[in-house]
Length: 254
Ligand code: HEC
Image 1 (cartoon, protein in one colour):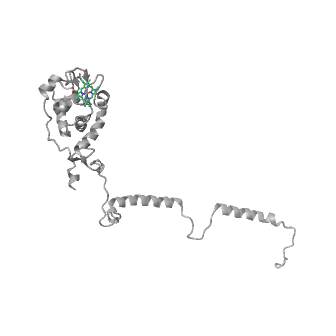
Image 2 (tube, protein in one colour):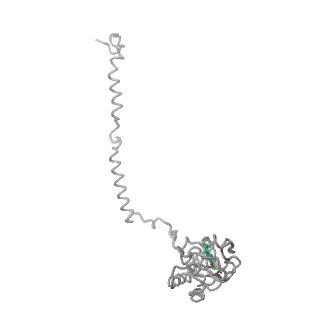
């Protein structure tokens, strides 16, 4: 028998070898199963996922219904929410009509610039728009030339050739702007605005021509189009939206 108070002196037992299976088993237990105190076990991942799905669907339904969350109730009283109004040209400040039409018209003049030159003086095979009688005179004549092109002779009596029609793809606003631009650039200064409404009338008149699509001639211009385009003239200083060129009455009234 062995005295428990005395050290085990039995050398026949290899302590390391006999402890080995136990250590191995303990290592396996540690590896395979993490034992926590009751109630502190980690939650199964599928429960977590299920809760997330429920919260997502329920939150979406409730939020949309506005029962539990309403944006308007979370803001301070008197706070005005900023709204984006895309119809008024991004709320750019209005500018005087003549300036607005000129700015837009300068861009549209890109269609003409290759022939009539940046300074409107023409050159080579092209007549000048500077001091041109037909650009500065009756607006209906001018509009018919732009929309349909012109088969010479020109206003000076000289025949240069044929100007191709420029109306394709032009909106009434484009036409009004380029006409206003030509009439007030290159030393020209009629000081008036050819309005979008006038240009829209010009397009109707152009479609109603006897031979629509063919270039106009000097004879047709003087016979049928020697007049100003119908439409109310506007004050060149009246404020308009710089993008749409529409009168900015509401903005000015505020
Ligand atoms: C491809 C060249 C070309 C382009 C582009 C062109 N024109 Fe012309 N334009 C002519 C030619 C050529 C004439 C003269 C035709 C003739 O008399 O035989 C002319 C004549 C004119 C006249 C008459 C001038 C006068 O006093 O007789 C006006 C006005 C005019 N163009 C305006 C415009 C405007 C505005 C644009 C741009 C929207 C434009 N043209 C684009 C070639 C062009």
